[in-house]
Length: 419
Ligand code: AMP
Ligand code: MG
Image 1 (tube, rainbow, N blue to C red):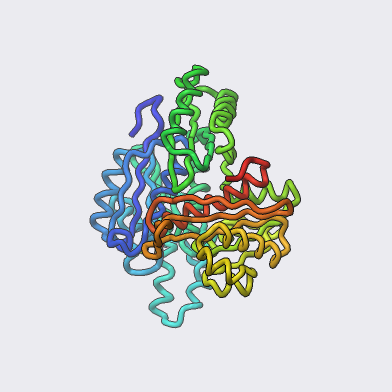
Image 2: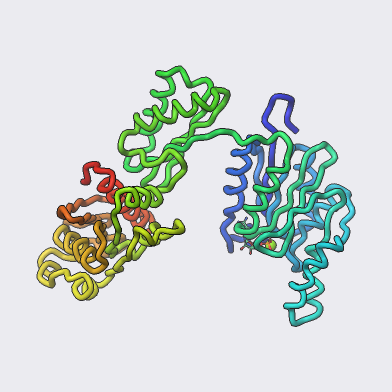
């Protein structure tokens, strides 16, 4: 339990033998940790446990004594291995009773089952711990529960599937007393090394005397670096001023200060400027198009993509000359230019980006090691081509190529130098 004046402490337990055996990747811990931190809680411990009632009960007993808030995900479904309710009941010595209203709500779900025994299992999801506040299911069938603990804290039980869990977590956090959302600003940049970002942010904070009231951390992802500023007493106005100053210090590498992704930034710039976009992709296999279509409503500016993985598609669909391919090879300036121009013609977009490169592990040729990638950007005023030597394994190179292609579009749209 936290002391007066301290941020409330929290623990996260993800439940599922599929997590402890590596059959499924635990993404809930990171998502819950980010949400709890964003609500001003201090995450003291995280654990993944198998579907084992006794060990889960022991952990929940200890964690509910030590922490103000314990969030558990998983094990709330109808099957035999869903034991979170029973483990919580044992840990807190609370009765587990079937809620008549919840059971009635599950009746239509039960009717969809063919086997009467299976249908009966469905109603286990209506079992509620004594004194718990029920969190209605939105996308799935399992409701969540907020259970008061003897020490005055809360045990929050949530379903495992991330799409069911996350909206319920927001509702649960909204019901907890004293968990105000801590203000943070994320300055997202592309093209700058992590340590450069760190030094730039440190200098801005030190110069302005903001170091005391503002915390900061640097989070690197392939090809992107995020500087996260947190209000630690400085106040919202100072946080905004610091955020603006950091953005200026990062220069044109800084693409967003409001949480927008690089793809969202590109789409918004295209919208503002009345441009339409297309891609021609070889080594990224459509990843740039996938990124541009991830935000809903991209169809007003994104027209389409040609995944020209083979030379034949480059020739037939994009109109890349046979002789260019023969003379320069598929990973070359001449071919990437022709690809960018070809997809612009084929889709009728005003602006296009093309990618062709060697993602590895094989495919290197003399003068073109693995990681060699050519990018082309074409619009009504002409075509620009740039090459990069990207680091990493195949997945890393493809991710970095995707980010680089998006960034070239951003730079072209923002009137920044490309190349
Ligand atoms: P459950 O609530 O235990 O029935 O969870 C059902 C499904 O949710 C699992 O099969 C996983 O696919 C998914 N899931 C459960 N826990 C996690 C987790 N920690 N991270 C990501 N997915 C999860
Ligand atoms: Mg499970």
